[in-house]
Amino acid sequence: MIKAYVEYIKNNPKKLWFKRKIYGWGWTPATWQGWLTIFVYVVLVLVFSLTIDEQSPPREVVFTFILPITLLTATLLRICYKKGEKPKWQWGFPKEDN
Image (tube, rainbow, N blue to C red; front, side, top):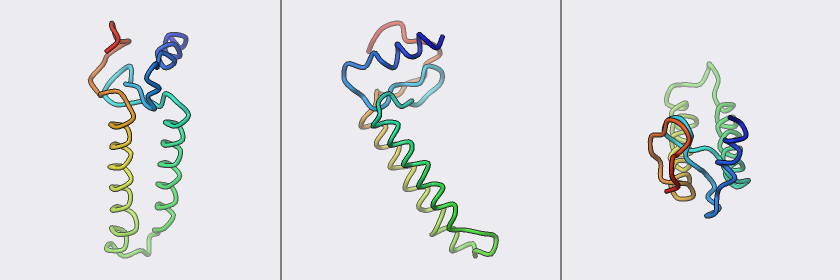
């Protein structure tokens, strides 16, 4: 299974940053650029999560955490759409290359 997965990820003649997930809907990083994008996203989410505490008023939480995370996630999805395969539901390895 792991060998087939690595082969699926390496079969990337278009050098897409993200390939379709094997199970479900979405993407998985396929190149170093894709992994870097995910790493930066996670780091920024952690940075924004450190800006709030239990003393933060709700309005501040919206502007210092919820809004930035929403914008970051929208940006991540846009990058995945632009630099990845067209998403579709899959349940197992694809039968033919699209």
